[in-house]
Image 1: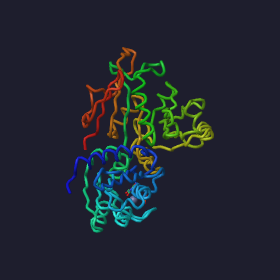
Image 2: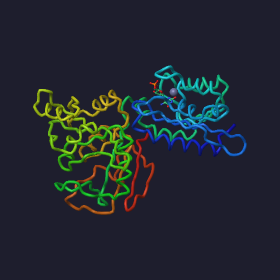
Image 3: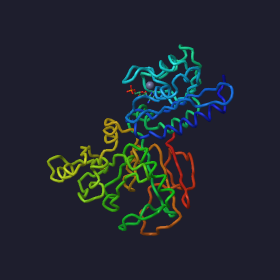
Image 4: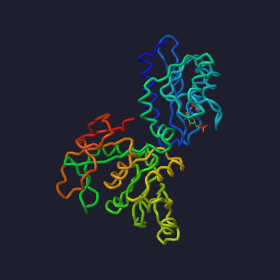
Length: 368
Ligand code: AOF
Ligand code: ZN
């Protein structure tokens, strides 16, 4: 049976649903399974599963649990190839066979060496019809953290910046300046909620005293870890970040050693201290990302300021760029943005534009 427009609609719904646990499944991707029965009248979703918070159980078994006996004969829409390995849970591909799923429509193949292709093989050997690659690029977009981690061995990095209409990211010495409106700000908070860790430079912290929390009503608990690049430990103990270190993790990336008095004070205030290597321009970023990968972080959001953005770009460590351009101008006292829509570094392609209130958003992806 060929892939129908209904199959694509169901897959699009599955991918949308997978965003619900993005940033909450550790090193596991947030995957969705929808089980759909068509007994001749109208198709009905009889089971929905999403990778559980923390990464287990997997999506397939959650969906089967919800569907119960109705799983038999259903079509499973899965955003990732069902697993084939005995890990913390038995193979999902075997569960789909055992519970009588008739057909599996999948988006992306799992690059995990224990699965890749083996999941599909178990399904086919078990008599299930398999359609792979349906809306694959949409699922890959959602799962970019997991895929980058598997393919490049480092977290996926998104650079987010708000620019005035004259290409400035702030005004020197005047703290936080409102550049974008409430709609863009809400969308930026969703980005925070779905990331594992936010990175800012110490300059931004000293200038703006940001809290970097997710402040969407009902989603406050989805604040990611907040990391400050702070070679010389200038982070004030009274900063909003340090004061909230017991509520949401604050990581201080530094080249200073534990015998430093400030190191001890920050640690006692609840910050997680991260020993870093030094490069010519500051903290060595490839090693920092390696370390974050080792701690199970798959998605990094770089929020500022200009020097940090430039350092990530120069090191070719940015995968996705989101620029929000507000309608106002800052003028000659403004801090020049390292990139703007008319001046993008090579190797990035525009993948989408959106309008949020009076602002425009541009999104770019590193060409593969
Ligand atoms: C699925 N469904 O919902 C997810 C999958 O440590 P484990 O045993 O949980 O295995 C982790 C691997 O499982 C991960 O690398 C990826 O290959 C797969 N994730 N597979 O069938 C799911 N999240
Ligand atoms: Zn599985």
